[in-house]
Structure formats: structure tokens, C-alpha cells
Length: 119
Image 1 (cartoon, rainbow, N blue to C red):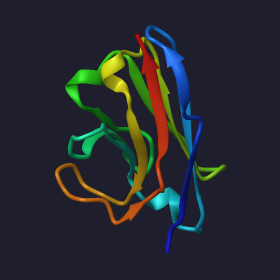
Image 2: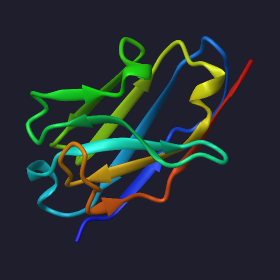
Image 3: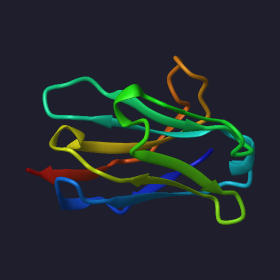
Image 4: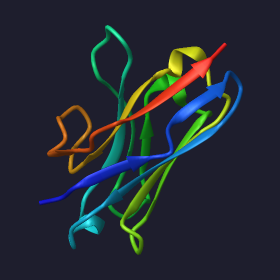
């Protein structure tokens, strides 16, 4: 079993930056691919980014490429999402996720953290 706890959300002006963190429990963290999803009001939850277990491969949805960076520290059981040049359309609840392949639902989810970008 893996438990995920997100932090780092908040209110930021358009063009600003935030860094989300996701702390994971469990000894098998380093064996899981990790990622982030988001859900904006009145929209379906969507994939944002994924990082392989080793950190060697990353994937992003087109709308965040060049602005967001996903990384992980397996020694700290933590995955990060650095978000730069934020836009109002990035406003959403961001969810940490663990153990999933691209196009498949994650096995584990965090509770989510709110990110609000004011224009």
C-alpha cells in the first residue's frame, strides 16, 4: 500500500511559479512510476506529467511542455512538479499519482492540492 500526500499548492499570479511536492509512504516508492494529474472546475481529471521509476524518462501533456518539470528524489520518497509561467487555465486541483502506465489509471492517488492562478 502506498499513501501519497501533496503540498505546495496555493494562489499565484499569472506568470508566476509554484512547486508541488508529493511525499509517499511505503518501501516500494522507487519501483513505481509517479505522476501528476489535475482537475479543473466542471472538467474531467486529466494527465499532466509522469516520471519513470528511475527518473530517466518523463512525459508531459502538450499544454505544459516547456513550463512544467517533474522530478523525483527516491531517497526522500518524494516527487515534485515545478510549474513556471503559470496561466489561468492551469487553475485546478492537482493530484499526485503512483504506479501507472501512460493511458492507464493510476493504482494510487493523493488527496489533491489546489492551485489557483489569478489573471
